[in-house]
Structures are given as C-alpha cells and as structure tokens.
Image 1: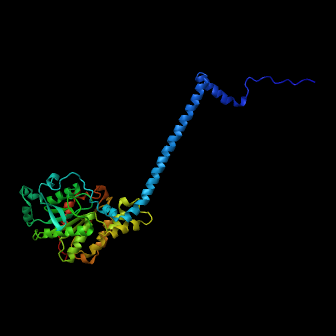
Image 2 (image 1 turned 45 degrees about the vertical axis):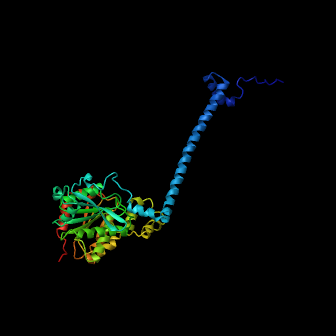
Image 3 (image 1 turned 180 degrees about the vertical axis):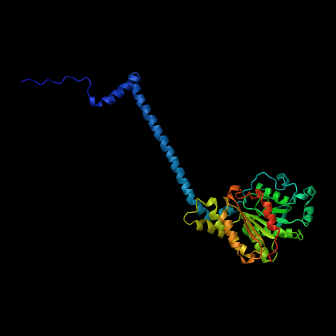
Length: 387
C-alpha cells in the first residue's frame, strides 16, 4: 500500500488569526518591532479610551444632576409660595426693584424736570411718601429758585391737575414716567406723582389698602390747594388698580374726580397674574389657582377694577396697546365692556382707545403717540355729565 504523504510543516501556523497577527506585526514594524513599545502603545490606547468614556460619563452625570435640580426647583416653588405668601406679594409689587439705580429722587432736575419740586407727605404716623409736583411747562421760568410754598400757591391758578399713579417696580423717577410728565406738562397740566409706601424713598410696607390710602391722602392734599381747577386721576398698569380703588371711595363719599384715565389696565389681579408672561411655565401646573392665585387673594391683594368700575361716577378713558406683553390687550377691552353698560357710568363719557400693534407702544410707551394730545383734549374737553 502507498503511504499517505505527511503534511509538511506550515510556515504560517494559525492562519485563521492572520488578520490580528498581521495587524500586530504591522504595529511592530511601524514602531521598530519592539515588544516593549507595542505594549506601551496598547496601554496608551486603552488609557485614552477610558479617559474619553470618563469625560462623557462625567458630562452626562452633570447634565442629569442639573436636570434633576431644575425639576425639583420647579416643583418646590409652588409649595414655597404657598408656605411663604410674602414671596407672591413681592412678585406683585416688585417695590424693591428700584430702577433706574443711582438717581437722587430729591433732585428731579437731574431727570430734566427743572420745573419740579420734591417734597414729602405723611399719610400715617409711620408712613412718609415722596412726591413730585411738576408745573405746566409755561411756568418753568417763573419756577426757578422757588420753594414749596410757591408751588402750592400756584396750583390754584387756572391750570388743571393730574394725579399720576404709577405701576409696580421702579420709582416716580422711572424714565417712561418722566417722559409722560413732560408731555402732560407741555399740555398745560400740573402733574403730581408720588411713590407709594415701600417704593423709592417712601417709608412703610406696601399693601393694597396702604397704597390706596396714600393716593387718597395725596388727592385730598391736591383738592385743598387746587381751588376750582379740574383734578384728573391717571393710573398705569398696577396703578390702575389703585386708581379705581381711589375713585370708588371718592364717588362713595360724593367727591369724585373730574375724570379717570386708565392706561394699560387689567380686570382684576387674578386674571392679570394668570395672563402674565412670567406665569406661563406654571399656567398648566396642577393646582395653579390654589398655589398662586389663592395665595395672592389671601394676602389681601385684589385690585378688582372690574368691580370698582361699576361704582364709579365720572368720565372714564381706557387706553391700551395691542402689543402689550405684560397686561394683555384683551383684559383692557374686557374692562371697557364691563364699564360701558354700568349703571353709574351711563351719564358719563366712557371711551376705549386702542393703539395698533405696529406702533410698538407695548406696555409703557403710549406717551410716544403723537395722537395722545388730541385724544386727551377731546376727552377732557367735555367732562361734565351728558344731558
């Protein structure tokens, strides 16, 4: 029998592992064929890979912790507001936000009001409020160097007076407020503006009742010095709530103002809080009314313009910009729709003036309207009850 030939020795044993061996030999060739160098290279590769994984894991871990923190904070804030109502009160008033900063409220001339006198009134024993009296522009030369007594005397001359009630945040020296004073002054109005207790350099703790009492005190101060001149009340934003509170009280005691002007008003503080852009992240939070709106009400803050206008007996002008991002336009329109058919207002002019969104007046720039002068002249030109 013929013997089967024995297979000869193979030069390349383990052919199935050739790709790995070739790769290893290629690595050795590249780095000079040193075993020690090869081991060092593999170790470097492993170390770099571990570092990359470690960095990725660390970044993801930080992002996850940040996300958990934000979610926890989001859930915790409603409970904090409910436990500590003072937080919600501060969010409504924002009286500690006193921009523009670093202005001296004792020097209105620094804001371009060189015919304005600064003084202080004391509505209650522990309350002091800062007040500005801006004269009609035609009297600015006569006003130079004059004291408070002169300003009080000149208020009885033949010029109407506007009591201006500003909104939350800032002071009576806020830029958009100063610009409005200048417009009204140029039209021949005395303008009396002040900071409620707790605002600006006024002393006291803010509250709806306290703000209303401050406004009442200033109104009475004006009436004691203005003679037979008309006195109008102008409220802006949160100041519209103070204004309707004040005018309702004045009408109940049968001393109504000659007209009420509401700029960018709302219906009531609950509807305004629910419509405010800051509330958008919580608007659909379970229990939004309980945690936020009920907390405002329980703090004694209502500013119920929609109720107050039913008890007002004087001409009413409402102005609102369609692009108002703070108090939605539809709330001003809704307030007008409530006021227009009100029984107490049926004998008085009630007017709503919208400003188109393309004008860009937003929440606080209606004073820029070239039509404002004509609007006020036409409205205030007939402030007697219609026969």
